[in-house]
Each structure stands twice: as structure tokens, then as C-alpha cells.
Amino acid sequence: MATRKQTAAKSTQPRKARAEASPKLNATADKSADHDLGRAIPYLLARAGMRMGQSFSKELKQFKLSLTEWRVCVALHHKAHQRLSDLALHTSTDASTLSRVVDGLLQRGVLVRDRSDEDARALALSLTEAGRDLTLRIIPLAQVYERVSLAGLTTAQAESLRDMLRMVYDNLAVLDNE
Image (tube, rainbow, N blue to C red; front, top):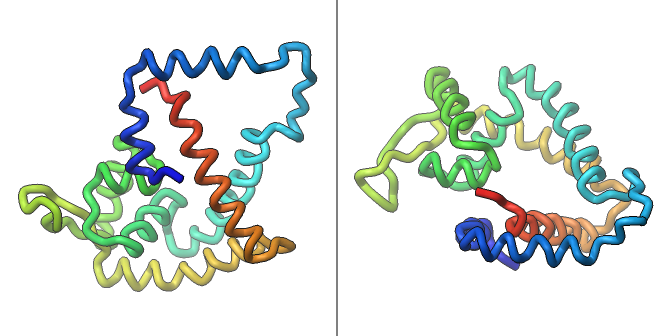
């Protein structure tokens, strides 16, 4: 299975190669088939993600965080000293939105800029002590939401679901028009 860095590298493949892949996908589509939204993977993924995101966002209000701010905090908790470009990949947030979110978290004392471990000339982001404390207070709540969402699945099924979702994400790189 490809990692996100490998996926990012794949998405830089020439547009011609990506364009050639699209007709192959279209050629196999049954144009007369009924398209039941309730069975459509994109819809089902979006529906589940939207429901969880909206519910979890309500919980995050007590911590004065948005869902995107939470993703930044937890990504930096998992791996500190990330550059903005790496953080954008890890949080699936576009760079301009991420820049505004990071600026707000810096002003609130949740994040700090420091020198990148990989390149001393580059700036990286890390959680402050207050940011780490905040993140550690929220992680158990996030874990509850994950457990609720996975209720009825075995541990093996949950791992399989994670693997499949990563694969779906990686598969969609062929459709990127960037």
C-alpha cells in the first residue's frame, strides 16, 4: 500500500498519464445502470465523515477548537516539528486554509514555530506545553468517537476498514487534476 508521500509523488505524474487512466475508468462504466446513492461509496464515506465531523465539532467547542484546529494539534502531537507543507498532507487541509488556522493557533499560544529537524533554514511547527495539554485532554474524547463509530466491528474488521480507506484515498490520486 502506498504512503501519503508516495501518493503525493504519484500525483506529480504527467497529466497525460492521468488523463489516459480516466478514459479506461469511464470505458468500464455501465451507462444504463441505476446509480443508487445509498450504495455509492463516495456518498457513504462523505455521509459517515460528515456525521462524525459535525458531532465531534460540537464537542470541540468546549475547548474552543474547530475540527481543522484539532487535526493540526493531533497531527503535531503524533509527529512534532512539521513544516506547513507536511502538515497540509497529514491533515488533508489546503495550504491557504492551514496557514490561517496555524496563525490563529500561534496567536493563542497552542503552537510555536521552531527550526525544522530536517532543514535548519526552514521553520517547523510544534505544540507548546499548553497545546500538548489541550491535545491530551481531547484524545480520550476522540477515542470514544472512534469506538462508537466502530461498534459492531471486530478489531480485525476495524483494521481492514482502515486499510481499505487508505487504499481508496490512494486510488483517487489518479483523478487529481493538479
